[in-house]
Image (cartoon, rainbow, N blue to C red; front, side, top):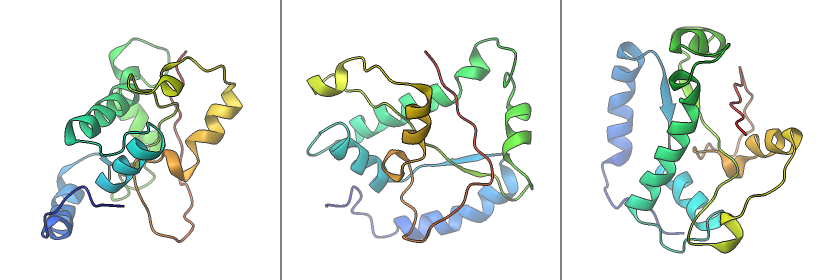
Length: 151
């Protein structure tokens, strides 16, 4: 699989920005270009995704993640309330996002409405293929999970 970025300094930029993100942000949602490319090719069946298509995936995920902040509801209607339940310590504020189901106008199979249950959506959210981050091969654990289910 080809890399999305051909910039040699990309890992260095990530490491150099880590300290600033630790000290000057309340929460960080981590996204990975290689994971976004994998999702575009495997889930949306786009052979060579462009940055515009990857940005569309990011905007869809971020719009869904922040929907409870934009629309009035009983729970999770402010950022402080959401972060207080997700972040146990102040330095542990790097969040991993997941999204399902993926849809695309380019693929007939991905554009239709699918009948699913809440348990099926929960199971798919925890699958590594739906994560916006490509962690290493080691098995991690979840400290906290917040699922925003709409529909």
